[in-house]
Length: 125
Image (cartoon, rainbow, N blue to C red; front, side):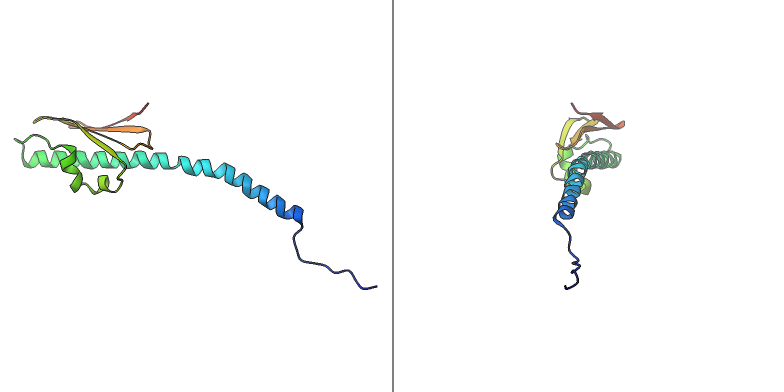
């Protein structure tokens, strides 16, 4: 009688267990990875608002008699705002003494407001 052969293969049960473990890991990790985008969108809005604020203050220091520029005139000079094209940037107020710009990303949670006094972050509903 010939000796029994020892094969080096996985059984069907072992392969199914590996697939089950991979499936469980995917179910746990994918939602967490998708939620990691939201803080990145909020950070992009904050950086853009801060850049607009810096340019508005710098322009006003150069020409104090002129009114503050609108956000749309500052955007071409602000690479932080051009890097994320989905940002919504609006000019709320531009007067000789004050300005107010709002910036948010549709996928983010925060509304960032830039005024002459500084930057304010509020939670969107």
